[in-house]
Length: 331
Ligand code: NDP
Image (cartoon, rainbow, N blue to C red):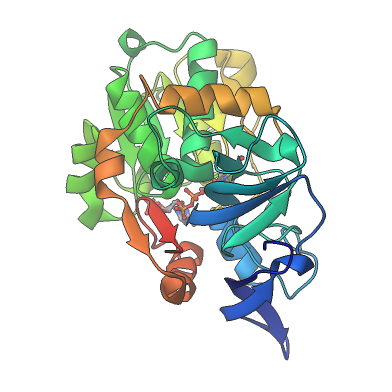
């Protein structure tokens, strides 16, 4: 009987102005309406989950709430023919984990339009090693390639390189033959970034604030996961005609730039959204990640945690101290 099934979830509640997450027992009868009920075996940790868990109202308006923008598992009930009970699916983005109970619970109920069939050869854990972060890295790389980025043009920079998005971007770009310069604040992570394929690892001071509107162009292209001042500095260092795929804001949502990189060097700033894009676009990148774009070093180094470790793992994101890919295993 799934209509009234009890399940465990890591739920966040507001208590005297503070946001506290803990395991609770919930009932599937209380999940929102939706065409597909999924037993979630795995989720993935993202910066956005840390924002939701810490009461960021731009991400989650009301509490109690179950975060988790990613989920993978087995269809238990379905009102649509193309998702049959027993089939494995991936759900990322849209409203999952924001204002719809997400993957940090053992069940979710969502619209069929949010569900991607599990790519052949993958299981739920493999999909969640990548999660939204891996999908976003794939979308960034795809946008750079669409703009004509190619290894022979010169080095490609990845900022926030040790993070969930950055680490997959480093490995994927290296796999595609690019000379990757990883920009990271974690000196102790240099060996790991080189293992993922970075040719060079430089500190965040490579993007330290300079007064000049343009500086010597050293990178042909870049993936930026941090935004803010570092992105403004990165734009000054891009070679003529190069592109920067921009997806994140850990260093701030402001972009204090001038138009000079754009009008004097023809630099392209490419926005990347992984949340509300058409399902077909998500599916295409999932398909690539499961085949030619598989990041085997990332897959091998992913860390599994249980619900009891979520609190500390999410806090590390907010401190910029998280590294690599973390999978939540509900089993
Ligand atoms: P992580 O926390 O895993 O990675 C971010 C990395 O950025 C950190 O590990 C750190 O790497 C670096 N960093 C942290 N704080 C700062 C700072 N103040 N200044 C400069 N660098 C910093 O987060 P994710 O990889 O999950 O997400 C990265 C960003 O991408 C987030 O803003 C997230 O919201 C966004 N995102 C956007 C998506 C979209 O659809 N557009 C989808 C997924 C994520 P290091 O120590 O190596 O420098």
